View (cartoon, rainbow, N blue to C red):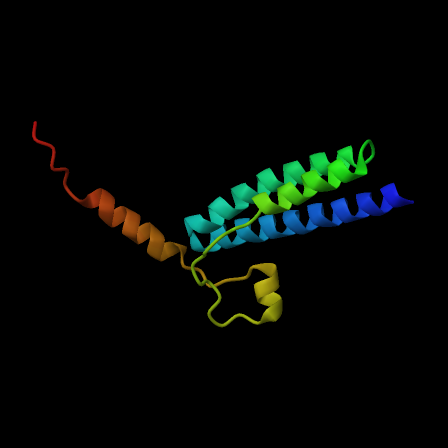
Length: 120
């Protein structure tokens, strides 16, 4: 019974981290902010570690939950740009944002258009 409860906790943590990772990917695709890309990559690493912990719960429940906890610690995202201007609660939960990517692309294009200052 105890191992089953530990496995349920580990799998809940796994699905929560996967959901947040998919949400970060969606926000990155819509806005182009690299802090969300970094968060998605951290989420992938964390979900792999959590899955490893969930698998090891069967052999050693305490060690497995410790690995899950380490995975949740890896998933910490840090400071982010504000992306939700007029979104409601459900839209924020699902990661629906205003499209800002066009502005990011224009900034990159302007940087590339500058003449190089290499002395040849």
